[in-house]
Length: 530
Ligand SMILES: Cc1cc2nc3c(=O)[nH]c(=O)nc-3n(C[C@H](O)[C@H](O)[C@H](O)COP(=O)(O)OP(=O)(O)OC[C@H]3O[C@@H](n4cnc5c(N)ncnc54)[C@H](O)[C@@H]3O)c2cc1C
Image 1 (spheres, rainbow, N blue to C red):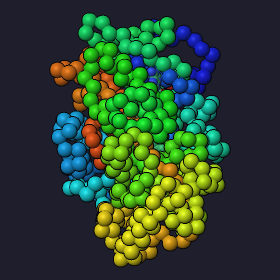
Image 2: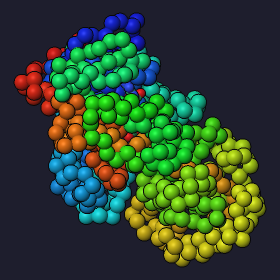
Image 3: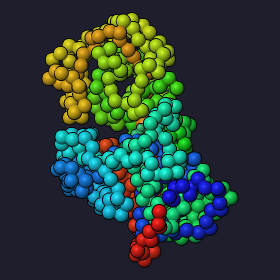
Image 4: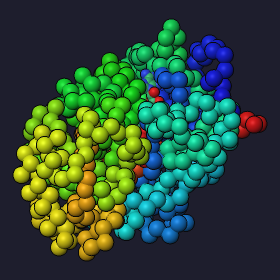
């Protein structure tokens, strides 16, 4: 398959292609496939030795309202309702035409992938993140890739980035079947396998863009300068792993270690865009989330909190812990900005469950933690635990007591936990409010909690076809951006599960289609024999 060509003996890069795609996450590969399927000659450049980027770590959820898979799976949804919801949550932080391009193109792109690539997906049960007009109830409107046998990938499995559990945390993860983002990348690689004119290179970073006479006409990679006759789609992620940039732009510490994406996105796209005069936006934003620091010192993504409470070193709660993760992340961000980048937070819970009361990706394994270490403490009583955390014992005990009293009545008068559908949807409590479970059963535990994220959101400002804009709003000819390299269409919020992947794929798809149109219409795709 095409992807296996990437692990062939190194050979010279082509001098000229129609389209260069930088990166190999879902946005990049969707753009590459849409371009190649239109008969264009495509070169994909990937910096690392794996294909898939952060998408390979992800759940693979895609927020694409009104698509045919939702309809097939019995979810009542349509594009207009999805657009109403998207507008209500994002507001006017991003242009209306951009929002429309995203939401209205979703169904077309899903149909294209299904028809042209045999792409398989199913509805996911994961509610939207805000109570706003058009919220999809009760189970949300995300779709996720259907699991596929890894054997279908053949030799390319060796270059598909492993799951986060294996790649970042060194766990032994069975890979007979590919799930979530792994399946998404695998299915896109299989789609590219059916295209004649695609060349995929690993360990081949874009160093800079070739910019001449006011347009981008190619890419520099090592000693090579490759011409892109129609354009370059940069989908090379954000600057998640650039600690210095994140500290200065976002006022946070931890950067790469606290961030959950692959640790390789250091802002190459941002540097390349800046060098050619692109307008840059949303640098202060990320897809925020709470994270739990693993014994390796790196964070794991905590999207769903079902039990326990979050406290600062003052021993007090500061948020509804059952909120959707980006909203909870914003609460943590506010605390960080208030208390300082190095502020410490703890997730305190009891022993009602054998493990930690939440869903983590990769999952938390309590046995991996050493008790009374930097990341994890355990004690028979809440007061004793407070002592180990350096928190005033009476304050923490009072916080737990107040929370427990409210939980018994199904109320959280301080932060309204369980009012939002999201918290109730994932709640596991037996009482009137399933998001509220008292902390009663010792030993009590505390895990180090950090402000984490699924990637940064700032990048090149784009138009409706993913074209990169200058500060005056004019496009830079030949340059397109998608995924974490583009300033997010979602602005300051995270409307629903799968917005990052869904929007990234749509704008890369639109960019490819725009280039195919510029070329003079799509050619009949050539299909290589397998
Ligand atoms: C645990 C986890 C779960 C998630 N679940 C979901 C989910 O279910 N749904 C969802 O929508 N989002 C999810 N996300 C977020 C989502 O995965 C990211 O937003 C998305 O993958 C970003 O896509 P991207 O293409 O911009 O970057 P990436 O997927 O990171 O891909 C960028 C690629 O570009 C390469 N690259 C970087 N610089 C260069 C260069 N100079 N030259 C060539 N290549 C370069 C990188 O090596 C990388 O392979 C999740 C994230 C995590 C960590």
